[in-house]
Structures are given as C-alpha cells and as structure tokens.
Image 1 (cartoon, rainbow, N blue to C red):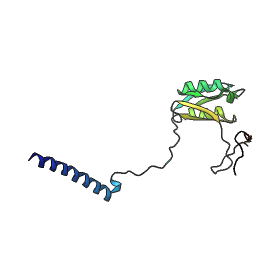
Image 2 (cartoon, one colour):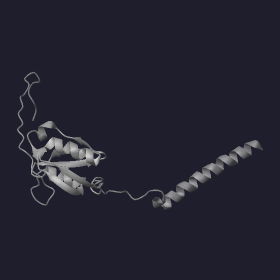
Image 3 (cartoon, one colour):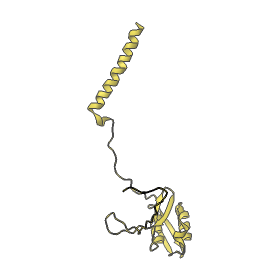
Image 4 (tube, rainbow, N blue to C red):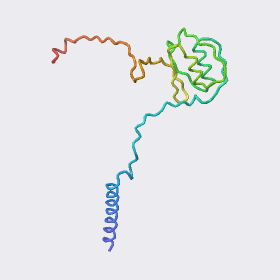
Length: 153
C-alpha cells in the first residue's frame, strides 16, 4: 500500500508539471513580460534644486569646486582640461545644472552628472542635427616583423 502512495504522489507531481508546461505552451505571455528596449534617460538629479550662487571671476577649477560644495556633488576632471581657464562671475538663484552650464560656457567643456559625482569632460562637436559627430584624424603606422615570415593575402 505504501508503494502505491509513493507512486501516486510521483504521478501527481509529474501531472502538475505537465499541466504547468501545457499552460505555458498555450499562454507564453503569461510568464514573460514585454522587453523594455528604451535607453535610459540621463538623470537630471541636480537640475531641480535652486541654489543662491555668488561666485566671482576666478580660476575655473576653483569655481567648480565651490559649486560642487554648494550642490553637494563631487567634481571629477583632468587638470589638463582646466589649465589656464578662467570662469566668469555668476550670481543669482539658479539650479546647479544651469550654474554648471554658465561656468563652462565658451570653455569647450561640459558636465555629466552620475549619482553624486559631476564629471567635467570635453564637449563633443556636433556636425548637424543627425547623430553624427566629428572625430580627429588618426594616423596608423606599422612595421612588418621579418621573424614571422611572409604574410599571406
């Protein structure tokens, strides 16, 4: 009698697995959600908080550090990018995003905020309204190693 109960419980499990599989075969969307193929939008976490800003005309690196302190952001940049650049004086109540744009205007630089860090980088020069952009010319030079032997093709 015990043998029959084990056999019945195994067949019940097998039957429920088969029924689940049959249900999935008839309704494939019941389990799978639609795939989200949208690219994530750039987060503007700093754009909404208005700040009272008063920065004199000074070295761009100094202005960026002070603005980062006001906005609660860490500023990451290469010293070579800011070398010899001076920021214009800015005053007034504005968002941190607007203040960064004013500081970096006419500098060839832009800001990208990720989390609590603002990255200062070179601006990408757009050619037109398309998704094309201009790249610098790259020269490639190579020598053939004679130890390898003749190359096919």
